[in-house]
Length: 259
Image 1: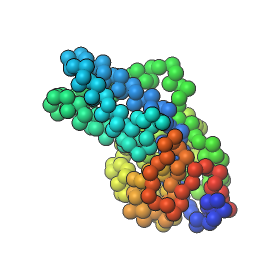
Image 2: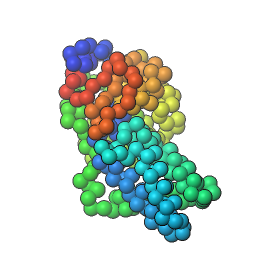
Image 3: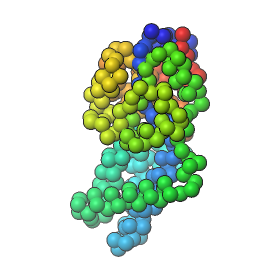
Image 4: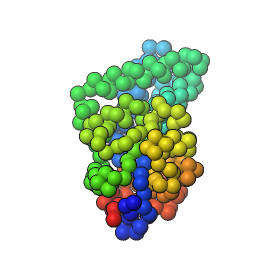
């Protein structure tokens, strides 16, 4: 088995590496920030149609910005848009809407309308193609080196199956990844069983794998799943992720090498 090193320090020998996607492999901040703002704009439009006051709408938007993680410096990697699945974000949006006086059924229905309208607005925008989610510098080189050493690579993400397939196709990574685990798969991350099932899909034991992620939830999930080695990536956002696990952290993909 090839040996993986962090800043020249051996981490061990591995047959597989599991990768988080957004904020780890993929530079997703601008994309997710634009999508978040599309959802907020649609919320304003639809709440006005519901006849809510400007004061109530403004309070709702402040809460949405807070829980989505929209900050002056950028998008917080520690909040729902960066970490949560589409369904989790839809539920958090519905919860905020319920504070306006709408009942839960109305809130869920309105949240679904907001997300559908935002999707149409976001993906029909001609500028969307310029804010797709490219790989971080050095990530492709590392992936190609793993492939050349016959190390299996897989994605584990809270994006949808369609979103992961689009990312792989856009970055021409079909030949790199053996498999992936999405928010549509059950259980989804951060349940440790998601790791177990993905390892089973690629025919490897957890003890033969490394996991690389950018969130506290990624790290805890991997440790609880008995992954051999876990690494935290800190270079994916303008606001640095909060990861309490300090053993193995890095900011640039060129800090990793293969021997």
